[in-house]
Amino acid sequence: MTPGQMLLMGFAGMFSRLDTDFIAVLDAVAAVPITDKYKKADLVREAVMLQVSLVGVLVVFITL
Image (cartoon, rainbow, N blue to C red; front, side, top):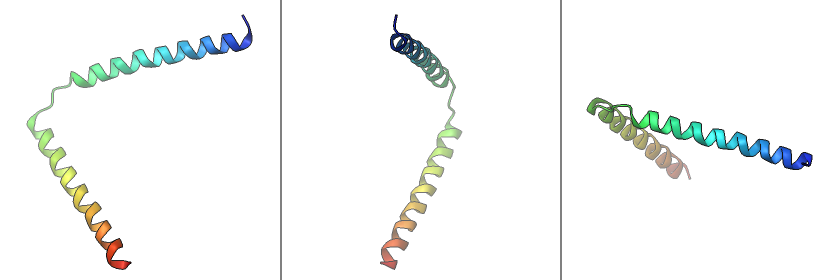
C-alpha cells in the first residue's frame, strides 16, 4: 500500500468516527426534554435579536 493510500484510509477512518459521534450527539440532544419555559425564552430572545437587527439597519439607512 502506498503512503497516499494509507493516508486516505486514515482520513476515511477519522471521518467515519466523526460521523458516528456526531449522530450520537444529535440523538442525545433530541432526547433532552424541552419545556414550555424554554420555548418562551427562545421566543423572547429571538424577538429581541430581531429588534436589535432592525434598529441597526434603520441606523445605517438613516445615516446614508
